[in-house]
Length: 126
Image 1 (cartoon, one colour):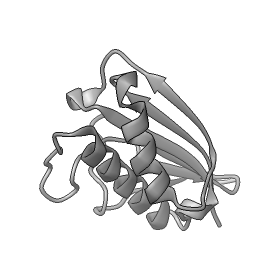
Image 2 (tube, one colour; image 1 turned 45 degrees about the vertical axis):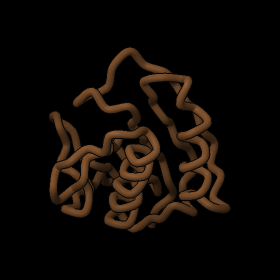
Image 3 (spheres, rainbow, N blue to C red; image 1 turned 90 degrees about the horizontal axis):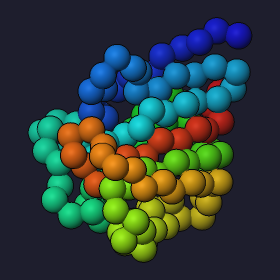
Image 4 (tube, helix red, strand yellow; image 1 turned 180 degrees about the vertical axis):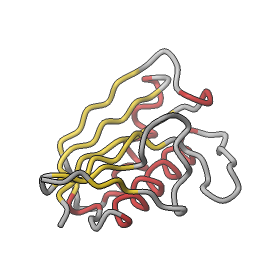
């Protein structure tokens, strides 16, 4: 099995020494996506818009790697404040539609760029 890196201009560049995604063994591992707009570099203020932007970035990496939201097996959502859980769930549920992968949601002390949410996924790919 060969490892293949996935990078796209449709998602923000990595903020550290890692790839946006890595394919191998029929899976695509999408690195945690921050709510950074890939063109402007802007970060939305509220947690709903941050969640939406993170999900858009996840989708862009999935598509660049030959996968899609409906092929996601597992998602991990890192959040700054568990009090935002229901707001994040609402946006996440609307965005994911009928795709309901296994998921964990973890409150963390701090995220890069002091954002409120970061999302990573593992999906099936070609």
